[in-house]
Image 1 (cartoon, rainbow, N blue to C red):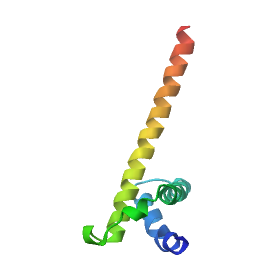
Image 2 (image 1 turned 180 degrees about the vertical axis):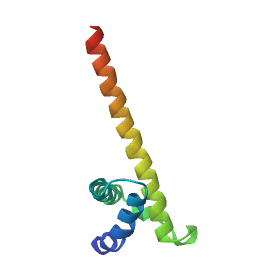
Image 3 (image 1 turned 90 degrees about the horizontal axis):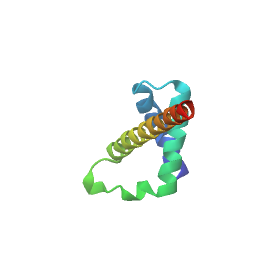
Length: 89
């Protein structure tokens, strides 16, 4: 697994950078992506008959970024709601 992560870290990082994230955010997101993939066993879902591994990996990164974006938006909304509650109480 370590060799696989090492081999694909740069393509994943470059893909995230092309999505206009800063270098620091891209590094953090790349690390978080590989941590999540290893933790959840996502790589075990890859099947040769379904296409190229790199395509599977980039689709996985796209879904991961969408989930992270949703999570960050949820946090911002909940923080805004908390400020509103405190202001009206």
